[in-house]
Image (cartoon, rainbow, N blue to C red; front, side, top):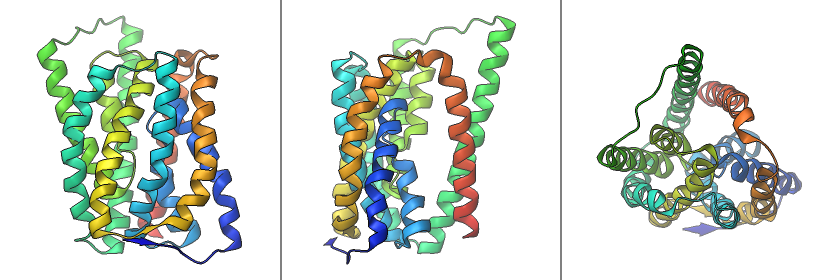
Length: 265
């Protein structure tokens, strides 16, 4: 269902928020939809059941514009992306039905717990990678069968997360692609392609079970499109490999902060 909320002056901040989220979402992959949900709930008092599909709708332009920009920069592995997307669509449709079955408080707490768990997992993986590099350990490459299994498994999980919480579900996607030994640039570009498919599928399901506030979507996307187009251009001029560790660490710490606030708000 579609609705239009009454304009409030605080909505004038949304294009700026959308630009920042769109820029970094396209720059580091995932669409940045993870941040829309807590921002809408905590700062704009949007009910969780409305914030979830609204967040999904605002994420689509980031993924679409970002994917196009990364495709032009040759940062896209279409074959791998399609494997993740195929299973992710089923996960997203399933997750969307979960949202309509729980209360707003349960959804907020679940999202907070999920955020903290995911952040801790990211920090643990960073620690393992750093220790392996220091020890000079060589990691064996995956077989084609192993890549397929990981693509389907992680893709389905990311779809579940996207449909349930209205976020990008980027962590399972990136985890799966890093496990497949893809380069960071390909992970960033291809993840946007996967999240686009998941988001479209989840949003389609939410049309039947949720409410999308198009007023909020208009204000958010006014900034997200510009930010998403600039992200890939900026990426082509920097050495992302050297910044990967710090970016992932601060991203994880931000997720922990949002998670704690969502649980106790």
